Image (cartoon, rainbow, N blue to C red; front, top):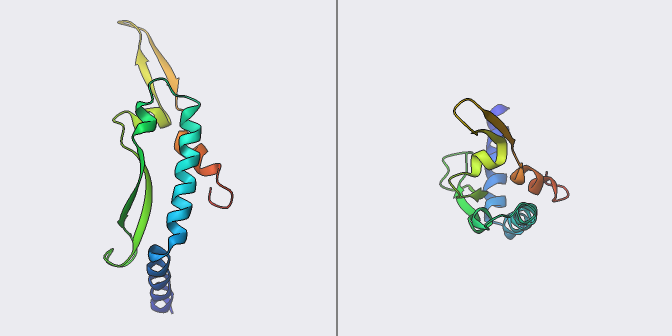
Length: 113
């Protein structure tokens, strides 16, 4: 029974990966993420490095299954998302909270987040 379930999941993932629906949803999420990022824009560097990648899926061999990833190709993307500690002086630091841009952008698309 488990083999049948896995086979069905792989076939479903192949179909969805080839459909335009996945591209449409990925573009909706990217628009939402860009909207959230625009609220925190200082230089526009982060927003300019947002995009969609078409990548091999994790189900099956990855050759037939295609997934879409919304990515921020900024070197500080992780720290912007989750927060970090900033050194102020030789003995003082402060916590800079994360902006959670990706999470808020994903949550901004009904039925996805």
